[in-house]
Length: 593
Image 1 (cartoon, one colour):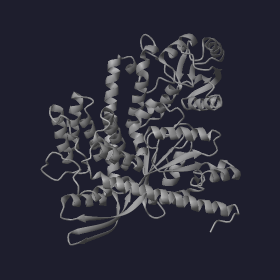
Image 2 (cartoon, helix red, strand yellow):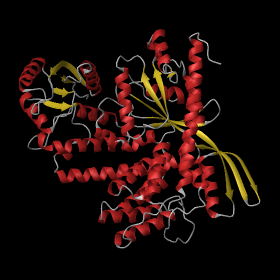
Image 3 (tube, one colour):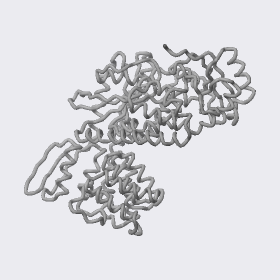
């Protein structure tokens, strides 16, 4: 038997800073309520300089809202903002009906959409983190039984347990999600070894991402004119016009004021976006609220660490706008793609743009190796795993390889170029180190159980025994949570797993405790370099060299990055000059000789 449709009242707050967006925001809230299975029978906006600390909209407006809800026979009142626990309690007592906020509504929709075990875990984690501080606001029995919007997901039995049991459940789910993150990292590493580029589709919810995904991959994923239809990620292989293959992933849609708890819970899924070689930002060209939606997507991308990933703006649904609007879009962003995923218009041009951008995101390098050195032989193998080798010539113990290296792996070439210098004195190992580019996180003083644990962890790491290395570093951190050498070791483990965002986070945590700690600065530079943030990487390397002048081998690496920045500036200047000539020619003006 289908659940009864709840009658909902929508309430928004108009402040001086949100005056122009209030109606659009309430319209979006109505779409969210519809996606959650509610019927909107009442809408109300309250104008205030700032929210009331007790009731959010003020006592007088609450009385008016209660009377209107009685007249419209409202079952649930939905606020277009996140409510504090005290506000939620006050409103439920005065309105005498269920009250939920925008965050809880979105979490409820995600709970309805989740199909896979991973998706359900992530939704449950977000709901529990959201509800934990609100337990006191849900009644003396901690019970909100009765079903309907806001009660789906992990279940009321968990909410009726004490805080200790809820925290234990959060830890258990987080452990499972960490396992998912590790499996995804291993899958990404496998894809990197096969040199298969990854393209991630992102965009505001209901912008047409899944329709475009189906168009590019010939899939039949569920498409609907509703919010958050796609929750669990889909990854499929696509063949480009130049016969190169790539993987396209369809991700969860974004929305303005996407709950932070949800972004954090879905970090394992959203890491696919941050680790992609290219992002297609799908934009609803016919939306009257297009600019706000674009800004919301950029905020979420920045939050998940994907702001620096190369991106193509894809204006979808051009079949719903006129020729003049299409011309304005083209003039405003000449590098964007204009398509209709429904009709297929522009899809071929989009594939050509993808092929072009992925090809431009490689650098052709020529590297000479000494085939008698074990380190060089290891680097040859790694180069073959991540790059497209153009030529391989071996003569008199020397190997010269010309290869197209993706920018995200260009640090490998730099490691080879400076491999003649030792990075730092490290414990003697029985065999050649697996990661000679990493800097040993020395402790001062270099005695005590934590220093010994870091030393053991480093040995495991350089023997590629990441599990035992992680155990040793974790043991040191358990004893001393802010132990900088162990935190740096955790960062290098993430680097070895090619989980560059996590590595960057770990190095940043280490540097909070010791801003001039050279091993963490070098690791941060390597992580930034792997994320294509060359300028930031150079700054980190320069800070490391200043902190520890014995790291003289960083000099060539810094020089290479400076040279590359100069090359990029020259290329950008030439492109700007050419664009200027084309613009003048189009306007009928003579270009200078």
